[in-house]
Length: 178
Image (cartoon, rainbow, N blue to C red; front, side):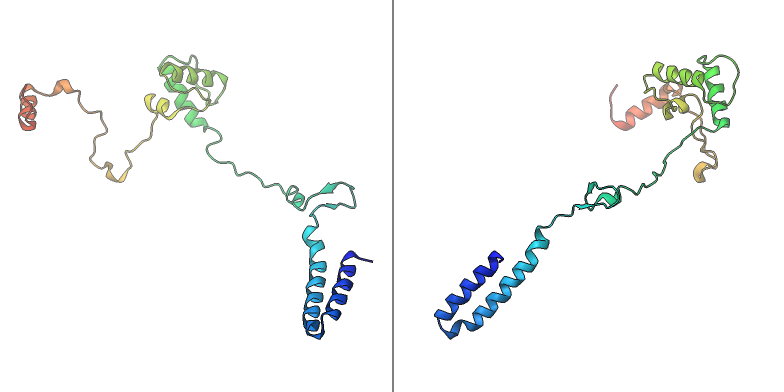
């Protein structure tokens, strides 16, 4: 016999001796006891089950292990041959690469780019650094930009091109005494 049935029989004996006023509470107690007995086993049950084919124990989360999501590749994966040719021409011009351009991002081109970046104090990863490309004259072309009409992309004149009278005028306007 189940232990909770023994408890219920004792509970009924007690309720009979205490009078008829406990009849309603004994039914409520019985309902509560049966509910607890029916709900307790699922609450303590685990999610571990045996697979009939393999005999191994697996958790309820194991079915997600079978699904493999393909990783979406992000970013640039390879350099276009035309761009490699431009980079090789710039490295030849700067005396970091010898020979002819071939449009292939090969070990010789990688070594030349790494040397160029190291000589300028930049990181030496395999893909070229944006600062290296700009310094080689291969940066972005803004000539087709909306605000490029009539703009000059030439470097500003060096400070020595400023006339002494202009420098005196700037100093006077700023209130700085020389």
